Structures are given as structure tokens and as C-alpha cells.
Image 1 (cartoon, rainbow, N blue to C red):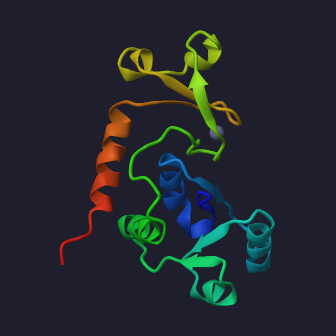
Image 2 (tube, protein in one colour; image 1 turned 180 degrees about the horizontal axis):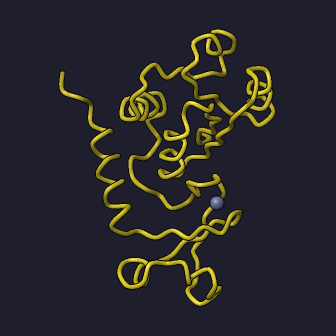
Length: 158
Ligand SMILES: [Zn+2]
């Protein structure tokens, strides 16, 4: 089965970032009319993620997220698409949805100058976005996100 491709509407920017974090192709758009949103989803063969019931009634291409809570939104997406990982994947840029590729230290000193000195960024593998150039690595910040994703992936106790 082809991996899911999504188009998150402007109420779901946070969810879009987390879905990119777990490696899913998730575009995020703002300021589009409903028609433009549906048109783009159709053209790019994406499922729209939205909290707008009216929009969801208009097209079967819209997946309605009922909860305003990010934890419940993430769970709802994984219930509908069980193949979505709950672990950081380092394949999608959380900023722009570009693809990440392994980055070799020393390739671009000016870019690396922005990395925090010492710690994880200097010892772990780096990944770079091929669109915006943002650098990623697995470190203490990802440990926190990983914990959050794990908590969200467990069903809440009744
Ligand atoms: Zn990027």
C-alpha cells in the first residue's frame, strides 16, 4: 500500500509537524479557500486533514479530526492509518516537508556554525533537508518528542 500523503489545513499546523517527524509526507497550507484546498488535494492525490465538519461533508477526500487535542488527533490518524510510525524517522523536514538525506560533517561549515556547540549535534549523525537546508540529529530534544509520541500512541485508560 502506498504511504499516506496528506494536506493539513491551517488549524492543524502542529499535527503536520509531528506527522513529518514520523516520516509522513504532509503538506501544510494556510489562507486557501475550501475549493482551492480540495483542488490541490485532488491534483496532488492527498487526503485533507481538517477540523472543519462542513468541509468534511463536501468531499470524501477529507479526514475529519474531531478533537482539538494534538494527542487525540495523532491517535485518530494512527487508528485510520495503522502503518504510520510512532517513532521519529528523520526522513521529512518538519519545517517545510522536504526530504532529509544523511549529511556529512564538513560539507558546509557555515551551515554547521549554527549547531549548538558540544553535545549530541557534534557526535550524532546529521540529516539535512534538501529544500530548506535545515539540519537534524537525534538528541535530547528528539528524546522528548519520542516520549510524547509513545504516550500519544497508547490508548487512554477509560
Ligand atoms: Zn526543509
